[in-house]
Length: 219
Ligand code: C5P
Image (cartoon, rainbow, N blue to C red; front, side, top):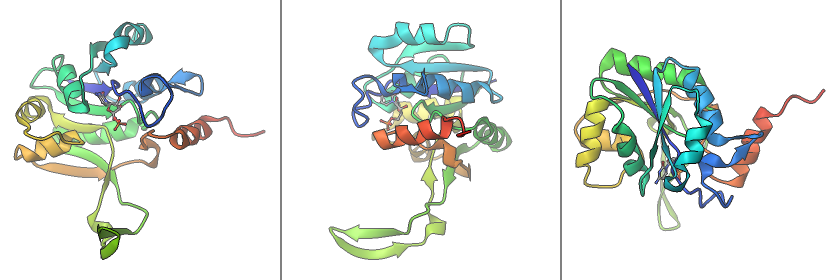
């Protein structure tokens, strides 16, 4: 079975909407509702949502009728993933996804899932950065890094669930993505092609961009 974990418990301070980011409206629905559309259109059997601890009841009402359970998220993203993994069996494939990437196409979930099933490794979607990237020392440029060697990483990130749980439980550092904890535990992580539509909503500008992508074309 394949289970999607959708982490939605962040407070969204950088967005400054005065509410948890996953519950911010985008074209009349919450970011979380849009994210769940993409998840449930993919080859996923069920979903576990890590909700803002004070908003579990609201999120449960929002997922009524869907194959989804809701848990209270934790103090950081890693704690929210671990809370959600409490509803995932070790022999399942888990796809961990940010609610903050609401327009991620179902095809990305399916690509990541298929590669986890094929290899048994961790699998992450990524794009080659469009900008030229420099390594710095203070404000001095040390070198230009070859873009082909770099990857801007997105979600969903897919793993054998038991191996991810053990990696997160034994992680001695707070990692910014699940694949970093998985790799630190000695597992292999592979990359597949991500999607420009899987961009993360962090600022008001990102939210405007998502609104524009969803707007009906002008007549
Ligand atoms: O803050 P940022 O956008 O990097 O968070 C990435 C994702 O992790 C978001 O979907 C957010 O809701 C989630 N998160 C969480 N629990 C936290 C912090 C972040 O579920 N404590």
